[in-house]
Image 1 (spheres, helix red, strand yellow):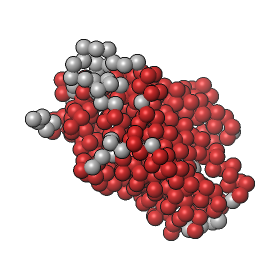
Image 2 (tube, rainbow, N blue to C red; image 1 turned 60 degrees about the horizontal axis):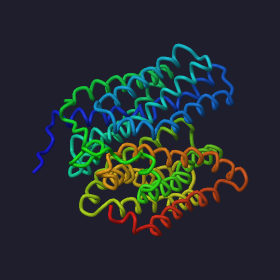
Image 3 (cartoon, rainbow, N blue to C red; image 1 turned 180 degrees about the vertical axis):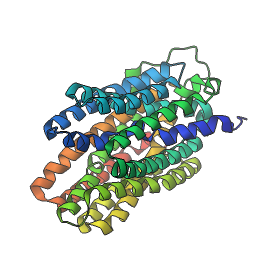
Length: 399
């Protein structure tokens, strides 16, 4: 019988999840306004950020493969931490185009590596049997970190200016590095961390074979891409609609949406952990897809401040369910292949494509037909994800 991991391993891991919030989103939401105040044109701002986003998308899957092969999983949290500190420092020192672009690439590298790295460490500590419970608690701490980070960024930005926001991001990255180094290296089983077989004498299967022929992974990635193609644009468009009608103040509106959603995700992560522990991940992911058409319908009928809370509560539930169920399902379905973190990176890449295209798609459609019908159309992508999930249920239900 496997003993429960000791608190000397778990509390540093929980702390990493709390402070890694700025490795995932980092200074991105504030960079545009910061540069605009320093005379940058919107086109140049968009170009620098797009280069960073493309770099992140290109490296996410390969980084997962590197994490599988690595014998030092903690290093893959240290590297993102250094990237976040570098990104914040560079943009404060110089607002030259190439310096800013390099900072955005560094931020994207951090975002690409941190999730598969922490997933691997969690698997290495808890093994498959304990992964669901430990990952659920990890996600609760992560969402709490996002909520605190957003609130602190909003307050410090208001009180001391955007420089304080970048300093906070760098501090979070440095603390995350210190926390991961507190986890004993011998506490992380490298074979379990990559999902290897008990008899690890054989080489793992070719990475491309795993990604292209593993049907559960393909169904999951495509369903998530459809979901995020609709989901990612709803909150920004909802904010634009409310501000355009004079019903909301821009900065406070954004801060409120982040804090509400992340707060709900804390509770939802723990609920998803318990549901998946009793059954499996299939119904949890199905439920997460259901909340997108509900949000689209609500956004169609309700605008302004009083619609923020129900909109973000629903977003928090749907996203909170996925943050537990998606890495859990990937880890369970690829167990024995030795390619779990490669699979994590690939799924993140594909769903990232959907999320990246969503704002442009939603923005153009809203320009053509108005905000209300656009919300209904974006919500419809959730129905498409549900249809795909049901149609290929035979491949994914057992997980």
